[in-house]
Amino acid sequence: MSDNDKALPPTAKSLRKSYCNDALPPIEEHTRQYETVRNAHETELIEDYVELIGDLISHRGEARAADIASRMGVSQATVSKMIRRLNELGLVTSKPYRSLFLTAEGQKMAETSRARHDIVLHFLRALGVNDHTARIDAEGMEHHVSNETLAIMQRFIDEQTKR
Image 1 (cartoon, rainbow, N blue to C red):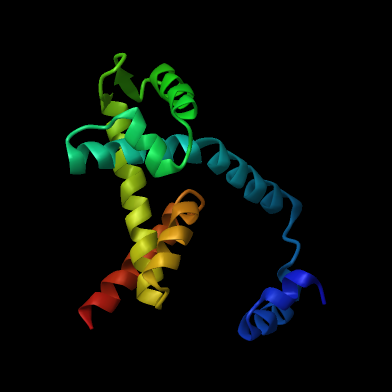
Image 2: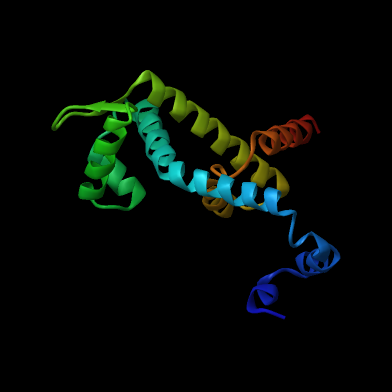
């Protein structure tokens, strides 16, 4: 038994044993899985920044680099580099010593990211995950979940709220 298996809860261990034959999917499917993850990794930091900028504008009326740095736990230099990149990608506009603004494309990305995040967060809470853990888990999961899975999560949430 590997160290990773020891960390799994008992139900996960039994599931892992029963699905042992699923460990290696066909090569083409396996390739698509890894390609999807790589693509998600490429965009997740950009999406996180754009989502946070949108949230700051929505809740505070403005998004400043200092606020982004403190909320993300990074330096202002790191934020400045990302702002330049977001500007080059046409997602934000900025002027020195002024607030940041989302372009129409940036606003669309922020709304999509926020919606995905909210679905995952509410789904985890509906499963009984405590708020602190659900917030941490949702932050990473939102970028890696397919639209099909999101739709099923949303249906589950809707069914839970009807009860």
